[in-house]
Length: 253
Image (cartoon, rainbow, N blue to C red; front, side, top):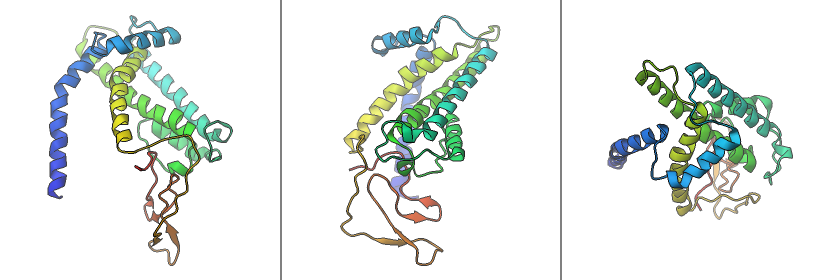
């Protein structure tokens, strides 16, 4: 490893160490229902979500009820993502007119993103429509992470509350994790990405004309070649482990 690599690791661990206590205190206040500096902004939205979903934030659940709620939420969200992929040709925000994803790939992707594995056995920019990526995959990037966090919180409560029969409310924990923890982090991260030129729009893909196109020979495949395409669909250059450009995030411009 290079010196630059060690410096990056050192910086990462220093930042991680610096934010551990303040972030931990903040999350403890969030999941215990205490006011934080974000309560004035997000508090009304949190209460509105409870009213719309008919959730009583003051009622806690037994561990079995908590687990059942988590499983029900995961199964329903998995089926919704599966349906979005299968029906994407008939849904809006599909300027490339991608057809529906094959059943096996759609189920694999839905199960993967629901379980926070995020295994992408496809080339995202040539398979998924804008709607599926935003309302399906990005939704699970949020909720699958939130589900893992709230289960850890519930586990901690179960250890701390030796005599209590409840471990919190899954719907309340999920809402608070999404609003107070993940949303602010993603908002800041989005600003960083935008500042670096990462863009997203609803227009059809732009086909770039390369000034000096290069032919790359596929290993162990004779004379078969594919040229790299730096436009939005990332359908180009292959190697023996798969597509070089397959990713959900747009290229910096």
